[in-house]
Image: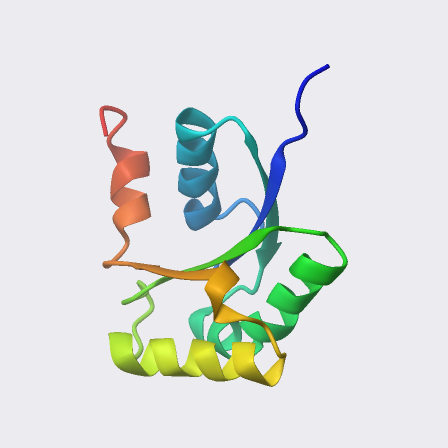
Length: 124
């Protein structure tokens, strides 16, 4: 009998099947086939940073994920502020408001549109 996969929640700033999701899903499948991705989408950076706490709480509670990854672009293509410190503070405030332990959460931001570059270059 095959061992059950570990459920890990991912919260993305893109829409369903957006580039962040596609790249993470591809690499996760290649790097660790013992993890099941449970993806949620918050469409844009301001919404992700403001609402990630409630979504993370649901991923832990309802979906029974063991960990959660909150992923966004530091500098999205459409512009906006790009401050790692401010982004981190906003995400941590959202997590704290939802009473989510940060010990089980990874905040993962990428430099400007790295996922689009990876998707454009098949060798990458």
